[in-house]
Image (cartoon, rainbow, N blue to C red; front, side):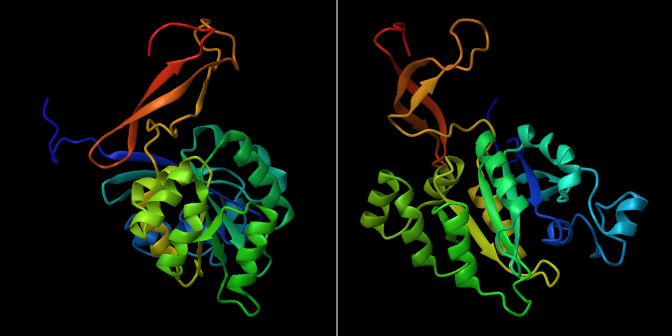
Length: 289
């Protein structure tokens, strides 16, 4: 069957919203749903009418207790948004969503910076190998310093945190340090393609950061645009040439954790995103591609 614009499958991604309690995660979710056209009125947690706070106990206490989902369109992408509890007492509700995420939006309070539960969430996302987009919220409050907050993210989370909402050239320069291929592309062209940036994010070499105020809808559209352009499809390979191929143990052919080869070459489609990989078998494994 010929793939046309009419019958081409939509891109589907599952995004988890995670944060330390009171960082403004549910407010950001509300803003995303409003700007995407999913909801017509912008609710507020303190007004007890947030779209994803469906239980009376949640509305009365102003916290998320149960994980919720909402589905909305974002250009050619269909997004399943999972809003998870930020309170440590309900962490089990949050943790059970991690295995289904294609990427996560980690919300950090601009007035508090990286907090204890933020670090816990970061370690969990690292364990699951989940690509992370960061949104530093409440930048409209007194004392919120964008430069100091970015420095804190790099010091306490990862040096790969890069400001994607600021100067375009600075963004490329920061992201180019994520791999030799990206650095070569930047030196040759002075920029990085969306495909290259998406690959760096998917491999957790770069963690794009946006700054704003979810309550005032500041910076949220830029975050949405970034999610639409820079998130990989679930089936896309997160590989570069030379990566080791490790067995999962599924199927019983090889035990888990066995290095069976390395990525020899990558086959890409017209959009520049990796789809297939050719593997060079390890000498003691044998076999074909």
